[in-house]
Length: 120
Image (tube, one colour):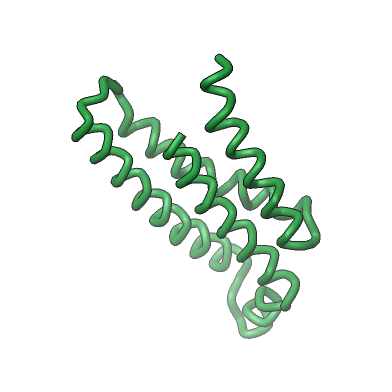
């Protein structure tokens, strides 16, 4: 449950920042100043991947110190760190305001990461 909340906050922040950049035309200003779309999205992905790795490292230490039997957890966190930013980027194009996206992301991550494991 704690991991779901941590990743929910990261995904919420990522979604809000992308939508706010689109609303305030920051992305347009970056493109006009000469940056390419590939450079823009690659830099965003790299920074978001590093944020995910920070949470993943914290989770790994918690799993290690609590002596939880979780084989191959490093690979799961690494793959999730690669895939989740792409999911959030796709999700950010569905919403026009950051508040709507924030509510949806929070409910979605809580339901999938908090309620679904308990229900299963």
